Amino acid sequence: MRCCIPTLLAVIAVLVSAVHGTFLPLERSIPLSHRTEVAELRARDRARHARMLSGIVDLTVQGTSDPNTVGLYYTKVKMGTPPKEFNVQIDTGSDILWVNCNTCSNCPQSSELGIELNFFDTVGSSTAALVSCADPICTTGVQGASAECSTRANQCSYSFKYGDGSGTAGYYVSDALYFNLIVGQPPLPPVNSSATIVFGCSIYQSGDLTKTDKAVDGIFGFGPGALSVVSQLSSRGITPKVFSHCLKGDGDGGGILVLGEIKESSIVYSPLVPSQPHYNLNLQSIAVNGKLLPINPAVFATSNDRGTIVDCGTTLAYLVQEAYDPLVTAITTAVSQSAQQTNSKGSQCYLVTTSIGDIFPLVSLNFEGGASMILKPEQYLMYNGYRDGAEMWCIGFQNVQEGVSILGDLVLKDKIVVYDLAHQRIGWANYDCSLSVNVSVTTSKDEYINGGQLSVNSSAIRVLSNLLSVSIVALSLYIMLV
Image 1 (cartoon, rainbow, N blue to C red):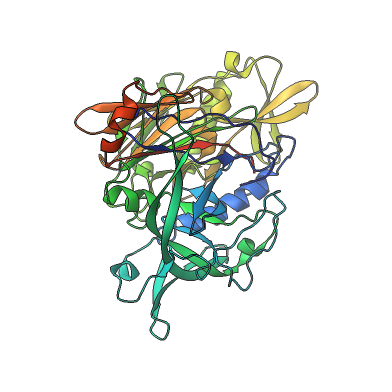
Image 2: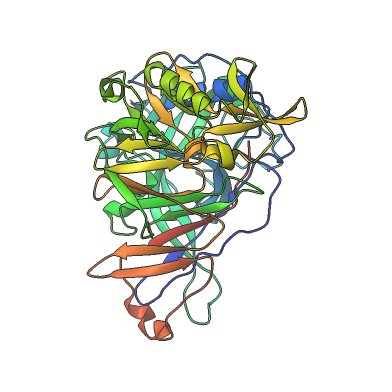
């Protein structure tokens, strides 16, 4: 979630033959030198999963430790009139965008992440309006939340209760969300563009949300529900009903998050499981070096307490025990002649004196529709320092004795991932996320944004008055490690 701002990675440009583009910075939260124990990471993931999986299953995860740094992501948004900037954690496991209200009784007043906390003031914003009890939004179901209505104040309230005991409560507000619009050739100065959205204003928090060590201004929900910003904007034709990210996993991190479809010829797609509150896919099998593992596909079937979820907000990756055990066994067998087995705080580890890419196998997660997610060794192993003069690498997947398998940043980094809600599918491809990307707007024909450099048609200015109603909201990100 936070701190220590690195260099700007990319400017997302607009092909203005018919496209608006906007971008926001995503930032890396903790320096690379910072180390976090896996027990702490798992506890944080468990708290996220309790929030994310509310109404499905409360995951029970056994604790181990990991000295590595870990990536979570947040971005800056501007809201209200005059605009005010907020640092909000990106979360594909929840739906709504919420920020702290200035009337919050116990919200953190400072953050140890090196960011200044801001608070939304409904009175101070001339365009803010409270959502009334009669508004249909007040009866819209939001995962993990309960909606209430204060008839005395005639305002629609919400409350979230998370599995770790923490929670937040507040009321819904309607106000302007601002983007930086880039158009023209040569590029014109950024122009403020805005859209009215409904979001939450938090007036009470409990548990870990009250702590200052990881405090941010709120959470930016990218879930599939009707109140997510993606759904609100796309339902009005402001943006396509698709968003994509490419998260850089090494160095200073960085990446791109786009409200639009990143186009890359090697992307493969798998259909989303219908009628689910999260991004569930049908994982069918796992292979190591091309050899299928002896796993009963039924352990991956989606039900009330099973399934496979894609969530870029989860730090690690989690596999049900029936899949975890054969995976670790197969990897260990493959490197038995070239790596020394060891154990570190309950994790299966290996001591190696050469590049892991030379000795560790490729792992393939095979999904419905023939789409395979190929994992390189660094996408399922975590570096754990030195021991006896050798590098120690540990299995990054965590064992879930029962419940839901979750694919987090460990496996999603260094990939383009496309959440195509219009066609109910998710796509991915291995990619160097420090490079620019092409983004498509689906109209009568494909049109592209080249992220990372401005690439604008010379005739663009002549058609500025006739731009498409569908825009691309491109978020050029900084990434902060947590």
